Length: 304
Image 1 (cartoon, rainbow, N blue to C red):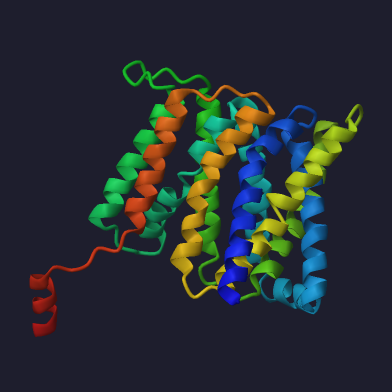
Image 2: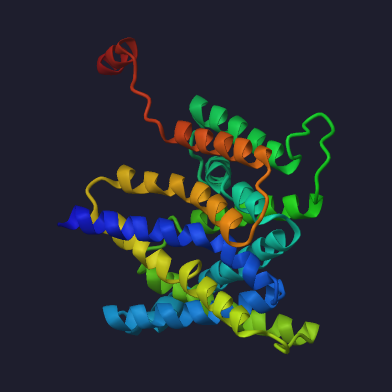
């Protein structure tokens, strides 16, 4: 029963994450990145607040923050504030298919950063995975014109890559966090919202001429990219006895996302984007492979 529920939660999370690239583009048609971040963060905070209320963990919010305020301030400034602000700007500058494919290389970035900051060993297969994935990024960014290295939007590509650094850095900082994960994410939004509002006031940005479709789109982003979907994914991982099977569901997400972008907003998917994305996915699969030691290695280990 638990495995069935885990699979249901996992599939639901993957399907919802598959829609966010389309939702980003629809929202950015009416909102600036900072407007989008502010409203989506408020929606996410409200949704996570309700989840914590249902779980009975609201009483943990203040003590968790007060136990290490500087740490949670840093986390909130990284994610959601800096990460999503930069990611939304990348989506604003690039076709959504390119931005989401490049952002998908964050797991490779995490491997490299973990080696630097956590002292984790990089295996040979990790180097192969990195080479394939970042070659995929170049294929996407140049639209297949590798020799000219002519980027359609160098700033957009740079921001998309920077978002992977921020997201990987956020999870590295979280490695030793013992707090309830939903409470920790909620604290990030509560920290970020005042800064986001301050940036809007500084830039003199309001909410005039936003249509009902725009409000619905930004609410959807807040709920299903930055809020509820995270809870579904955590629930799936908590219920399952086969974490690898649930984790591998995520590989379907970018391809479903490309289909939705093409169908719903009519974005042309450049063949190089699909090729580059396949290279990134192959790299991620290679990274996850568990290499069994050879008999000789096993014997030497036993002798030791």
